[in-house]
Image (cartoon, rainbow, N blue to C red; front, side, top):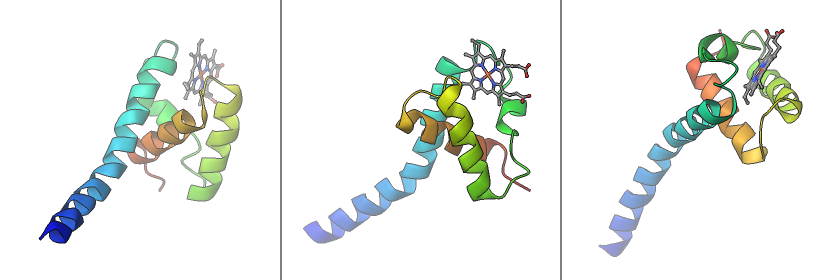
Length: 88
Ligand code: HEC
């Protein structure tokens, strides 16, 4: 019984995780970027023409020198951009 509940809780937490990363990213964006880039749409589309792995690398390199915050904040931002503007 207890094990069944643990499985249910684990599944619920796992399902919630991707959405939470995007929300954290949206929040980081509001605090770190929105002051200068009020419209997030064109920013999110940046590098969207690249393959997923290359896109993440470009964003990571860029955010390291442009207001990206710490590693967790950069990762959350990248997840947010990927969900807001999926690569074609
Ligand atoms: C203090 C102001 C400021 C903040 C804060 C800021 N930026 Fe910028 N950003 C600029 C300026 C100025 C440019 C250069 C604009 C230009 O001439 O293309 C720029 C350029 C960019 C570009 C390149 C745009 C292009 O057309 O190539 C991207 C992408 C970008 N910023 C993303 C971000 C993100 C993501 C954040 C938050 C983590 C952020 N910026 C925070 C001022 C800011």
